[in-house]
Length: 505
Image (cartoon, rainbow, N blue to C red):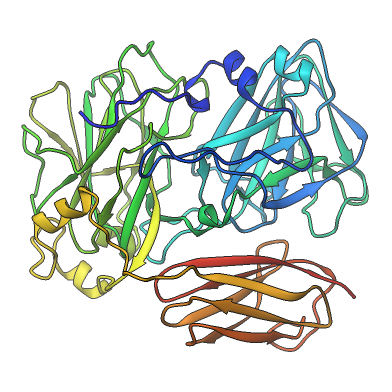
């Protein structure tokens, strides 16, 4: 069985050990990257790309069970985050990174936390209140995934027992969303009663390679749990675009039993099969996982030992071996699912023991997130996906040996592809600036987002290298207020490049 290497992974360790491994909190996180030990390894990302931060030394006291929330304005992937919490010799806390609904000012109730980290007495005593996410949190997604994640997130800090003192600025940067607080029990969530409260915090975006990663397929809504009767769960799926898979995430419920073994997550070639065989074929790629789950969250596995390329319109199996010890979330189907969902998500099966018969669950699908790189190529047309039943062989799909070649490490990207870069100059922007790019392939789109993640301006082009003069205004010509804006470009190969522009008035 591949992928059985043992790596120290923060999500798999008890809270006390997690705290011992976290680096000291800092408003400007600067953790250096570590080279992967093998192809596709999920190395700890560097933290040179500071996406959002807030200062301030004013204290807010959080009682046991209460907490504070700092929404994240930046539309991007997150490698690490931290809060400034006073050193204390008692107490504990939990930090969750959640999908955030900026209209309701509440965490998205349809899914569990994207990541969760616990901080015990030792962590709070020494100020170790930074969380490095391994793997990092990817929220960007390719077009036409079954259920894309929200593009807005938030940090939620909850005092587990005793009180915490968190620092904040009562009139923080206007481009950062205002912080909220909540009493024990989690509601109501109200704005901290100052002019513009912003917690003393930092959010790190890793490097350009991390920002290029996207969700290539996902089912996000967590409505029901598997039970301890399950030994294996297997879900048929497709991807909407040719993609190189980096890792898979599933949504974990709280462990009902201690975990003594390393179950696996694997991708198998379904090859048009209507249901999985009792004796499964060799996996295209697999890895073991070991989680210590004290609160529901999205978690992953140890590193894949190689990367595979998934082809659009081709059926695959996602296998999650739980060995009667893990509870995984599923989505209850209502019949009102989108065309993208119906086109790409097939049936779910489970079995009670290795070698047992599979039992279909026609009214549910497994919750999962697949992270990778869109490689361009020829996306499957929507009509074709809807018209051909999931499981029926695709005459235009590559043969199984082609999939196997990708799994064995055959190159899948086009030779000679150069880096895709984007820059804004002058920056800070006083009136107008050039948005320049290089290395684009195919049609190019440039979008400008404000601090709340709303698109305010943009342009399209077809040149591999070029410039666009942004006037510092909206598409309709109205001037934009001073603040921080995110400039994002995507090309025809599915690659993404970003830069941050500071607009001054």
